[in-house]
Length: 164
Image (tube, rainbow, N blue to C red; front, side, top):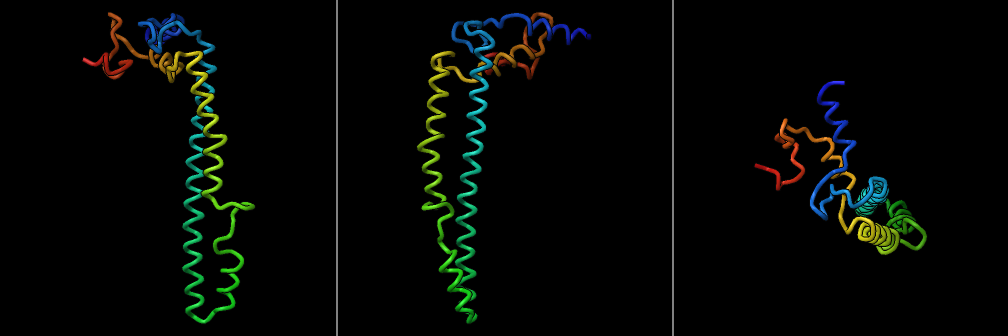
């Protein structure tokens, strides 16, 4: 093991020090910080899924607009029966029983997404004093490179307050 690896192992073993309320302080045990971090990670995945849901909503809306254009063009070329069939069977149709995409988004936002966000925030408030990303902040503090006096090397500061 080289000197840098040994130093990093030493930093992993020590309790992060800091002012009370600092995300790297030892007032929360590591497994609790990790557990809350996993819940926050799960919420981040749900946030990404919500973005995909918004993309789905916009893509379906754009497809419906293109379909309407195709129906108009078919009708303008005398293909009335085909245009009528598409308009009657597909144009403006619910994508799910009783719902357009905006209704699905609203139900998701008002239900699962809002509840998940609220419960994750309450968990952080209760176990981490409301602090976010405690696990990641501790990892950042453990993995930074320092000079011989224990000061962070440039680019390894824990936050803007450590910048020269």
